[in-house]
Length: 78
Image 1: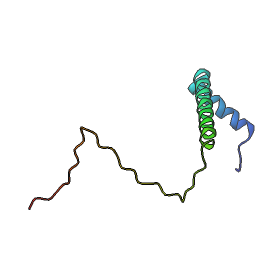
Image 2: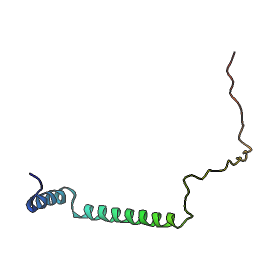
Image 3: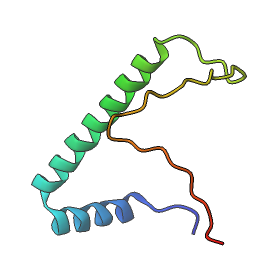
Image 4: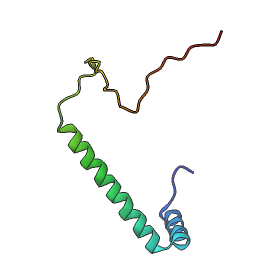
């Protein structure tokens, strides 16, 4: 009861191929491969940046006001 034999895996593989077809499985495999490659490239590019210090404080920066932005304070009616 611990693990499946090779015959169980072959039957499962046959059922999956019959349901999805080989063309769709090929497309899923290539999509997954390109996603993993993109993830690895992103991780490699991210590690090339300066090291991140988790204890460093981010300085407060004053945001420049847009001409179309109105800064108001809400008050309650009395």
